[in-house]
Length: 215
Image 1 (cartoon, one colour):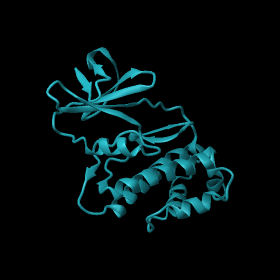
Image 2 (cartoon, rainbow, N blue to C red):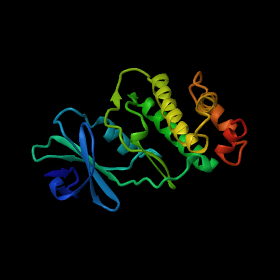
Image 3 (cartoon, rainbow, N blue to C red):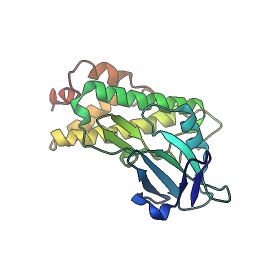
Image 4 (tube, rainbow, N blue to C red):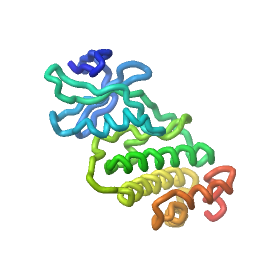
């Protein structure tokens, strides 16, 4: 059994639908709007990043409702909003793409100001649907004593590179090298912001139009 700190949830994971099993934990569906994660190994994860994200309520980051503990008050996981993929094409809507990538960027910068280093950013940890992009896994984010701006933005741009490349291959499956070059130019990895991406894509009705012009 696991218990939320506010006493609202008393959950037996064995009686809930398991929707995903990862290396360090399992995610269960509680109801149509709520799911929860329970870690496999006691003491391996710290609640610090979950507490911070819950308090900050960051746009484009999974909404955290509460932390979960066992009967001995050991941290076991957390309960959160349930998000579902719906196959939305991020290159079909300029406002959608820019709003999402900038929202995640702002969230990462806020975590940077609180001295957190973002870790394990990859496509498996982001949900994409018509409502936007949402980072859903931040268990491995770490608290450091120094500023991590360059590391955090570099890791985020690597995620964006992976994300844009995946969707670009739907439209241009043969121009892989040329597509990567365009993405790298768009992200401008020498900078620590998304200025070039924003300035460039705002010139086009759809993000895919930027790539169609060259490919």
